[in-house]
Image (cartoon, rainbow, N blue to C red; front, side, top):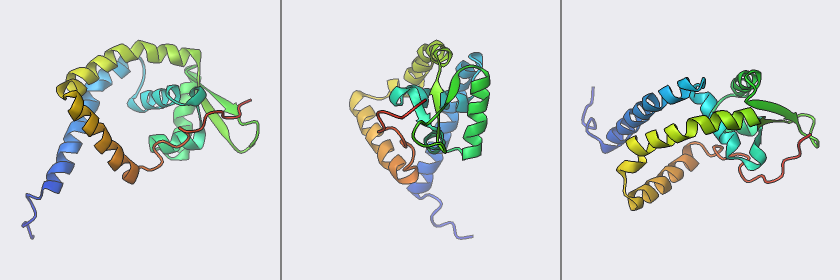
Length: 163
């Protein structure tokens, strides 16, 4: 085995990123669990809440979350059974449907956000100066735009046609 690149800083960058992601995910999960949400449930609800009209085309939601279309269908089915999300048909395209946040979904999100934001502050953003945070966010967006260009699919849409 050729190990001459074993100390390559690119390996260190990937390792640190993986460690930070795993650590933050583990720190955030108890708050989600207490609210009856999985990590992907929370991601789905927060993405809907931050989208125009608090709704996204199912295909855009799949692209944003990185789930397959069948995977996002299962998540939306579960959230719909819990009353957090509803499906809405597109008035202009019978093939398309939207997932939309319900009042109950907004309430559930509102119950989670204060502690979630405090956890983010305590374990992540609060460790950085404002300049560091600004630079970090710019860097993350630059990388995200290369590795997940669909992560903002549907975000620019301002008036989805819903029934």
